[in-house]
Image 1 (tube, rainbow, N blue to C red):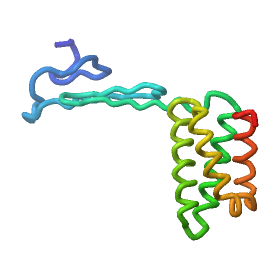
Image 2: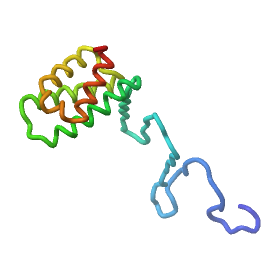
Image 3: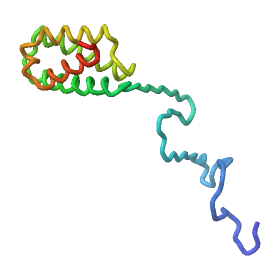
Image 4: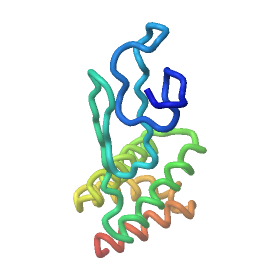
Length: 144
């Protein structure tokens, strides 16, 4: 007990968890304050698990350009009535986008399959700026 102060809780900051129940019989609450976290995963408390998924993103500007063009072409295709040809093209676009986002770049075989699907849908994609952009990005990456 400090002279001049009544008995009871002290004023000012405390550190560490409080042991034992509070005067009203409840267990003390423990709090965690986290400011800002980037590029990390963590869990607080009992029985928690942490799963962290990091995506590589485009490895270089040519892959990034292809990814942008693929996303734009997919958005444009969604405005048209689906056909077998556009469904195959959309599936290849999804595969290329996923590979760029997870591995950093699409493999040459995947790019060749996209180019084949783009050629098959040429009547439609040749009239779309996004289709032309995908074709140009593929030519740059495949050297054709």
